[in-house]
Length: 179
Image (cartoon, rainbow, N blue to C red; front, top):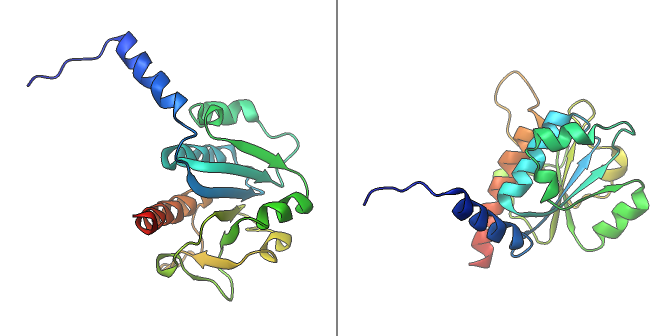
């Protein structure tokens, strides 16, 4: 059977149907981005959240002058489809903690290899800035920390890359738990 290119109307109708169903069957995962102020990294995290149908992104410790216009552009407009909110104080974070299992992506004295960890849902995955990591006030709230094994000389990896590795792993593990 030969392939036939879809016309604009067919593509548009398919796209509108997909948009109308975005909030159905979202993964019970929240991403809490702590001090992630690099637009490129945050844009990648939004694109990742869209690809995996993550429930929500929470932005914490965001710079006052953060460039949301550039974020929208670099994220390929996923800021329009991925629910997100900006949280300004730790009291709001504690409310989120009451109903989510807090999992930090951070190398700590108690962290476990991400591949050996089975996520509990609903889960809030906390990622931190590349320069400072996750703030101490948030680290004190986590239930568990997971890390990516680093076998080279460098001891860290890009925050968006680390988030992608962990989120795809958790995605598959959560889907298997539901099956």
